[in-house]
Amino acid sequence: MLISLLLSITVQAQVQEYNRRGNEAMDRKDYQEAKFWYEQGVSNCDRYSINRLTDIYKLDESMRVSMRIVMGKCLACLNEQALTKDTLVIKQLIDYYSEGIGTAKNEVSANYWQGQLEQLRDPASGIFIQRDPKDQMKFFAGYHASLLAPYGIQVGGIGKSVGWYVRLRSNFAFQTTQYDGEIVKFRQQNQLKIQQLNENDFYRVTGRYKETYLMGSAGMIVKTVSHFYVSAGIGYWDRKYSREFIRVSNGGTEEPASADWARVKNLSMNGITFDLDGTYVLSERFYVTMGASLMSFKYVYPNMGLGIFF
Image (spheres, rainbow, N blue to C red):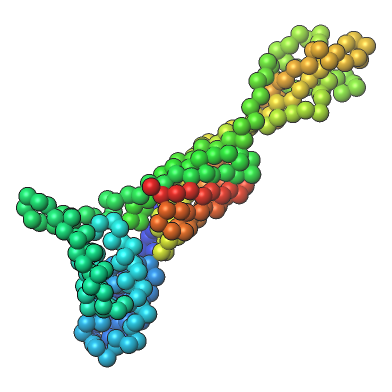
């Protein structure tokens, strides 16, 4: 959570800097320099930067040729943001298509968005219902796994700039065990004694063992640049290590019929886990995630996931 907060503060500081410098250039009517600074905001689909570039485009016709590419990027951002049903964005989109800003004039698209805008009008008052994009959260779900726990699920939601997630992972290698105990080497010939069992019984380890992993975590997601998010979270993990044992007779002969599974406590462990991941939004419906988990401040394992928005 601390990492996410620091990233958010850093990004916000960068946003304020390029818009501040752009505003200073606008005050001097140096539209060329102002354009240079506001262009940096378009890579993040910064609404303020887009609005100011639109002002420059309308104020100085001599700059329109040099602004074709950046205004096209502004148009792409507006189309993406309009999906949140933000009426201010939709009005601006209508303006772009009607006047041919960032594209050729397109009355069909202008009429389409005009229809979308009308659907957001309150039928009783005739007033447009302003939808705040930060309140429009997109929910997602998908597959998520690590090397230790290859089967998992991740669910969560993403708003305009922040979101949340919950993950559950396992390797589904469950093993029913009859005994739990510290395995202690006893005498010779690899014979062992298991606590909680008859002290007169001795066992020998077979080559069979199982490790059961269970992991769960939750955290925050912060948007850094367009289509890319960074997430950090905290959770809990548990590893149970079990082995198969065969009872050994006094003469050292194994008794196969007496084979059983026991959990080895001194080889099992659990503790806190920390996640740090990056998520790239491939399209309106799909995303991929890659990162790593720090477990008990000792072990680091990579993880990955993919899923859909709905």
